[in-house]
Image: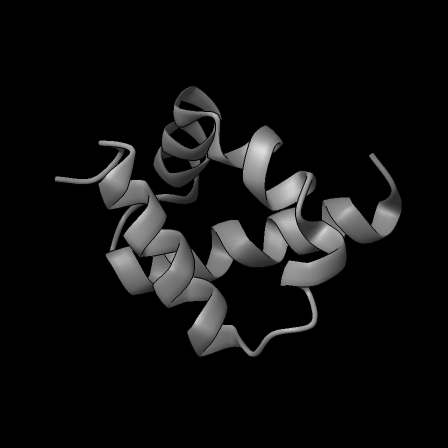
Length: 71
């Protein structure tokens, strides 16, 4: 993982934590266990990081719901 990808991962986790009112560790665990962290955020970094914060957060929340990481 590059520094840019790591920076983006922490950006996503931090903002999701605020948006979902959950601790960052919980958000990380949900993303990691559902495969979203490795297979979507890191793998899709080149495209995802070009979008705005609201789009990224809405997209990740929808995908977390779809994968059963959020109820």
